[in-house]
Length: 468
Image (cartoon, rainbow, N blue to C red; front, side):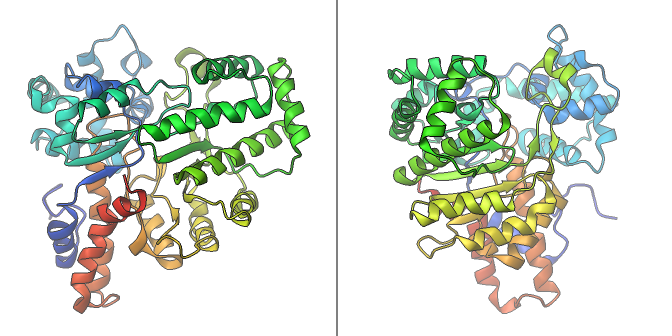
């Protein structure tokens, strides 16, 4: 019987172990999509305790705790202490066996704190006190943790109206880890609520110093902010969309729709679709002109629980996989850009695993030889960020594209303790390739190439692709 989570965790063969320990393990981390708060990095936040750094904003853990019968006050409650929340998380952990949270929890304890004790009610206090003591030392500050995990670059997620003051501060300071903004313009397309949308446009007008009364003004303001993001090292956009928007429209129609929503009128579904299609296309042209990479995270059905959305707000753990039909609209969107020879480097992330082969074949339609892996099938995202989901994504990409050109993993996390997810991913990759060698599916004579391939997927492909 193997020991739980030993040095060969997830590595089933000698070749897999060699690939990981001799190649993947040593590579730095480029975390090109995350939700870290740049203010915490700029101010080098020192976390008060393990409960705070682990449970603050972590909707993955909140979902598990709710499923375990834990009252909401121990998840998001403002009047509950960090220890009380942590105690309830420790109570939940044994029930997460076979959920990736069980592996992530213990990987983080081992890699960040050197704690190999299993977290459960009986060990909760000891682990909490040991880790909390370490978190109060400089090595465990926000920056200290990034250095500890050999992080080279992180890209945060930032709205076009954000000031980027903390990115500017870090840039001026010369912090050795690159902390770059990434452009997340979802609110620019959120026209379903005219009141909120008008307020957003007014904020965009304020920060861009452009009066916005027409759609052309909107595009001008966005371009100015896009240029500002570029000046601070931004090289990626990211879109959280339900599906791809590629409806036919005329400029006259878009002008009319924009005036209508600014006037406070509710749009019909066709108008919403046409407007989103126009904005998404114009934003894609900006990305191409700037030499950015555009990312599309699609397929999430968000905020399903209206009662708790009202009381807790968005991003609190009430989202699920959606079943949107996307192939035609995705292809139409990409094709429209390609016809103009203005299709930027693109990464597609699906949330429904049924779309794995769809995306794996779609990316092949728009590779043009200009850049290796110009169109990428993004790593397993959100609910698919676990062993089975990662394996499925890798297998689909391998069979229908080039795994060797894959830009690899990202944390998509708000936590400074989430970097072991890169290790988790690398171990899965090494296990799949190593097992193929052991089974005679890949040549053992090419181990040197396979080792370099693992290093490329872990780090080098992303470094070459993004050119940070």
